[in-house]
Length: 60
Image (cartoon, rainbow, N blue to C red; front, side, top):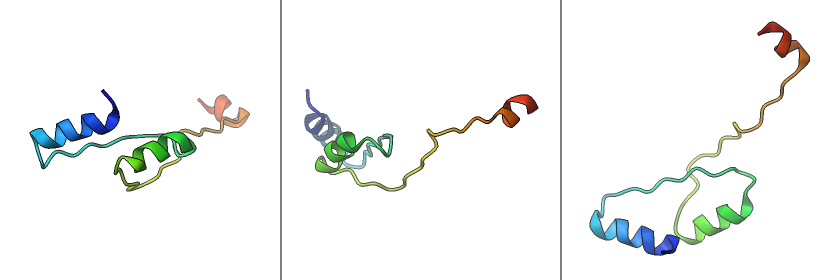
């Protein structure tokens, strides 16, 4: 079953249903697929990046 079929099945069972996804902002292929299926970007958070410095390591 492909993504479009799954979305159609969910919506046909409940018109008020919402489907939400979380995807890494740098994953252009996934973003392209999801937008082609009707998803919209509502917000973008870049919280997957973490900089760990020696100062932070010593203070924990």
